Length: 319
Image 1 (cartoon, rainbow, N blue to C red):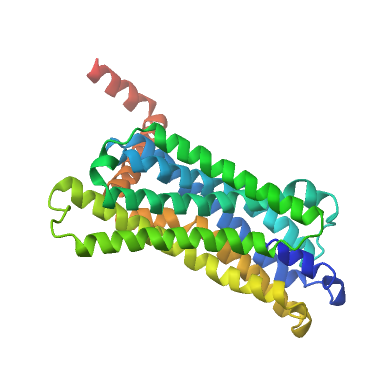
Image 2 (image 1 turned 60 degrees about the vertical axis):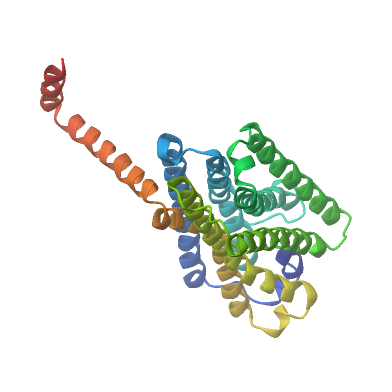
């Protein structure tokens, strides 16, 4: 969503000297580390959710899909973000803004964050349906979730193509960024407002059994995930507003300050895909148990590989 910053800054970037290597290299290390952490944490989350039967349910489809999207953000959007931001401010390598940026970078940078935000909106709607209509939610067909996931990608592709068309025809794309963000924000707010009203006004509590308590914990966990993601996006949106609606924003500060502020916003934006597995691990005991079991199994395999005689002995005992 903050890719529009480059359009406003590429003409301004020539007005100051490139940032020194002592400033660029540490941020590159931070970017690479953050992308690796995003990929590793989300891979672990996907594996545990798929393998643990206690975590498998209808809502798991959207959670796994969100982890997949966050994984794609760390694997593709993050490295491309490093490429164009460092090229813009540091001039460590030549970057062709007119061809390379339009051909692949803009679409990849835009589609995965959009899909992530749309997934959060879909999760909020699903949680509202589970709270307001628990019986219908309990008997919902699993194909509905496949349709929802397909709809998320179709809508993300449509928004990305719209943004690309606006950019090609020199139409300001600010409305695209802000419209999809605030539309998703409205859906999320309305969904959790319905959940709050339903829980507070319900005279017959639904969370008296184990299944109801589990649904309530899951709803609260996904609410924390959603709020954490929105809080990491909000500063970027504010910064984007300053850049988009104030053409003199970069000229009012020095190049070094602009560099650090911009890269900090990029880092904060990428952290949106890193905090979700951390919240899952803090809030879902079954996930922590699955992670422990996964690493324990890998450690046992390593021990058997290191001691072939021990492995043969164990195989003889089992036989």
